Image (cartoon, rainbow, N blue to C red; front, top):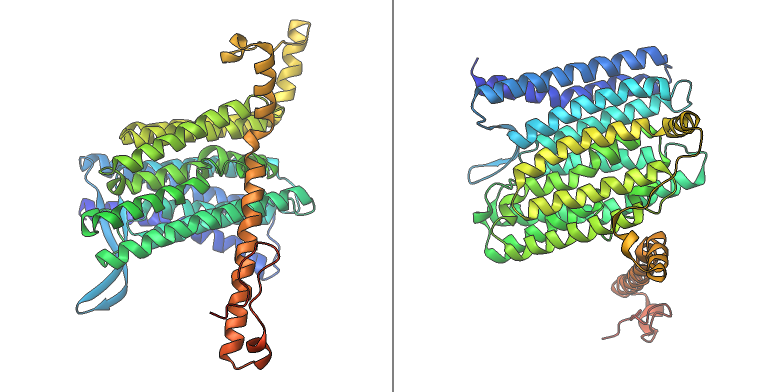
Length: 453
């Protein structure tokens, strides 16, 4: 067996095992067959153990090949004599690193969650979503064409929103899950648009050949990829959803917003690097977004009062730094940063429930309450400026207020366009009542409702 075939087989195995495990747990659930917790844990642990071993073996073959990537065809969506659209898997250094990280951390979270969610009513649902999420991350990591990347991207977003809303009997988690899902949908449109543009100009769905596109289309695809990465990467102005995502169970917070999902945005930028490399303007914009996000998250995170929200903002700050590294062209450094930060932040979030225990233990050993010393630049600020900066950070830079204002205006515009569409359709159908109505403006936004022009 050649090394190409061996590496491709191992990569495919790592790609499909989590999906098969999810089906193995979900089918009895759908058929009203109740699986015991120990059975669910055994299936989950076996799947993630095999997945992790497959990624390690794939890494060994990859290194033995001298780091040469492997790309292989999965299927042809369209196969005509002069026109073909195919799906492919690309196993290169970023894919190998991300797939190994996913296999390891998903398995770790699976083991931790067995005790954490013991006897919880949603135990079965959690592990199904965890396995589905792992399959989505594997698709994002290994996708050589945009159709596979997009499918994995949507799976990651859906499972993320469902796990934020895991505690369905409480209003706040459900509301925050919907908020995260709305942000994902807005930004995911850009990824779909990039895929359509790439296919329109090149006849393929790969991101490896930007020269097949005219310069203006390269610029547009690069901008769309940046916008698509802003949702899951929680870059400004889309940072507000991530700290609220901590309403979900601690294990899902660790793997989604500390380890893997938060890095899906920067990873997409690494995949789209051929479109960004030769466009300094886009790289400056990307670097500015990363810098603004890092400053915002660092400042706002320092005034938060609970550990999970602080760690959430710390993850956002590091995502901003990773984006700066990518914009500067340090793609290798960015991959190492993703790998190390994912492991550290997952460990911190898993340890978060024990922080109060550690705090009181430290106080008992010291014989007094530990004091928190001020640090960073606030020690050198005048008292008045320090108070204003604190209030500004506590208000999260008023990002939420601007977001609500933007959503209201967008809703009014869409409602007006919907009225125009309905009246135009009615006139086409020959409705005399609509045809006789004069043009009116929307009372909400002043937009034309019945366009008689």
